[in-house]
Structure formats: structure tokens, C-alpha cells
Image: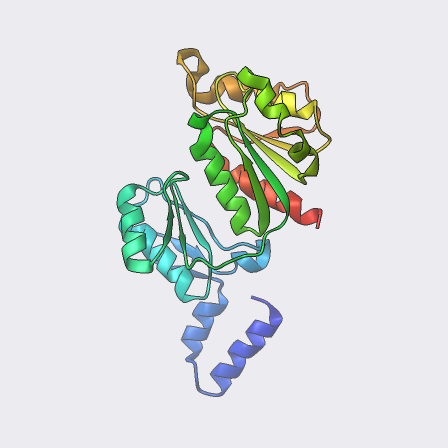
Length: 247
């Protein structure tokens, strides 16, 4: 906790408004729910509250973590990779805003004025769930996001039609499956930093995105960095951090 917050907390204890035990629990910076230790200080350290990764968690666990964060004042709480059942409970019990394509939900949604520009470029329609996850994440972190979909190398003229956007963005997220060629092509057209996201889209020898991952890691285009397969969240987060530096 910041010093000013600790001072206010001690003042409440001194005034008899808060028990010392409760103050100690708040001051430790996290809350132990038994199955999860909810990090309440993450926004202060990183500028964004704890993100709830839904895969592997029960709907009840996701709701409990999100409620705990919300009750301690967090807003725009992002829940990723949530099942339809978990999404329904988040909506019904916490009024969450659902993003079906991104497989995500936002608890305590609060409008944000987007600044700078993050371009999320998607090779094919099948890559849209990962691209949408990246775009949603960057937007929640305060970036103005532009999206260009279905502009893969199989029809290169579709990409060239958006060349101005490549030069106007502070950072570009390139989402592609199959052979993962899009980031290399984009790197040859612009001086902007590129975050490449391989997806698991493709036929047999794509090996669930491994072929695209290796192609992106071996890109001859300068300025290309790569996140893990289908990791739209990680790409959007990184893009938002880079975008902040440009403001």
C-alpha cells in the first residue's frame, strides 16, 4: 500500500472505526480466500488490477475472486477464458459485461478514454477470438484500439489497403495462424514495434500453432517480438504498456 493509504488506515484504527485485525488484513495487500490469494495491490504496482484467468477455475471460484476485487474498489476487472456457465454467473450475480468472441467478461465496467493507438491486425476470421482478446485487454488498459480483420497474406492487397494505419499506430499486434507469415510482412512495411501472436488455427502440420510460433520466432523482419500460442491477453497487455510510453 502507498504511504498515504497506510496513514489513512492507521487513522481509522486510532478513531475506533476499524479493528486492528481488519486493518492488518487490508494492509497485507492480498486476501486469502482459501483457494486463491487475491492481489489487491496489483493496480498500484502495475497500473492494472489482477486479471482472472478462467480456464481451470469453477464458475463459483471466478465469481468469488471477481466479487472480492470489486468489493475492494477495483473496476474493469478482466476475466479471461471464461466458460459460458461462468460468463452467465458473472453477468447474473455481478452485472458483468460479456465479450463472447473474446471469451471474456468485465466486472465493474467503467468507461475509459482511450489514448495513443494500438492496432490489432488479424490475418483471418478464424483468428478473431484471439485478436478480440488482445483488443479488449489493450482497451481496458487505456489504449485507443483500431482493429483490422481478415487481412492475411493470402490476399495481400487487403493489408496494403490499411497501410496508413500501420504508420499511425504506436504498436501493432499481429494475430495469425497457418504459417504465421503476417508479422514478417508487416515488419517490412513499417517502423512500428510488432507483437506477433501465433494462433492454433491451421491444418494438421500446423501442430496446434507450433508452426506459426516457430515461423514468427524466426522472422527476418526486424522489430518483431512473439508471445505464446493464442495468448491474445499477453499481447494486448504488452501493447498497452508500449503505447503508454509513447504518450
